[in-house]
Length: 314
Ligand code: FAD
Image (cartoon, rainbow, N blue to C red; front, top):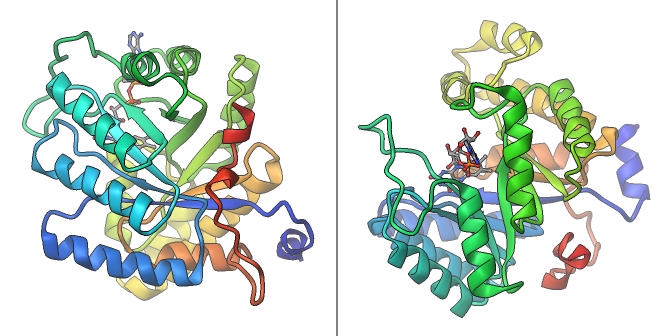
């Protein structure tokens, strides 16, 4: 009966999809086909295109995908951009390309070091942290771009002093970020407590939870361990006995994620879900459908970019 609540209110929770840049041109074509199919079933409030830390060939693909998504497909698009291990010229080029394609949303990130090194090298111009990129974008483009930053409900893996996570998050917001997208997580109670802490710390921009669908048991465990994410006991208890049956894992995993999302929505701290699609269509759509968030038949879909939910609060 909970789901009915969302049909009754006009204030339905909104959602967005995140896509990463495929390595080949054929992969990009497949992604466009997939996006087409997904948007037939659902209209996200916006889409995110990730950035390959360190720049290189794939970053060129990022800006192309952003341009297509924004100006050809007409979707409100948010471009991720990292600021370490990369010449400052590349940051300038990426921002200019986003600007020229009509994209007005950037998720400003530090990036991770390349896989073969534990360290990363700050580049000329003083880009040590995501905060520095936020400041740079504000200085260069004023209020043209709406800037988002990353948040870590379970702490950033490199940060040894937990309280510093909120301090550095606030620095990013004070530098000009107007929304937060979080790292994936499965512990809803911890997330809700973190939202309380974020608010108590004086950070008042919208918090958007990053939702990672569960597709196979292996990827579920790998991603959780990669992000240093706590796996609640209930998840392991339900998924471990069926770990070899991918279809069942997706089914039960979806149910667990749906329950988690419902809890987040009920907490009142969030009104938007950001789905890490991992460029797959089925699992994200299953989650939205079960939450009652896909458009119902006959519902008018208004995809006006002025609907971007937090732009109004600028
Ligand atoms: P920062 O906020 O700069 O933090 C980095 C580290 O420095 C943290 O440990 C923090 O505690 C510490 N720190 C921050 N400020 C200070 C300070 N003033 N003094 C001392 N220490 C400080 N990576 C990609 O390569 N491409 C992507 O597209 C991408 N998308 C992402 C999307 C989301 C929603 C999230 C959550 C992460 C994404 N990442 C992506 C990963 C991200 O680049 C890494 O998590 C990276 O390690 C940290 O980036 P950040 O922007 O949070 O960095």
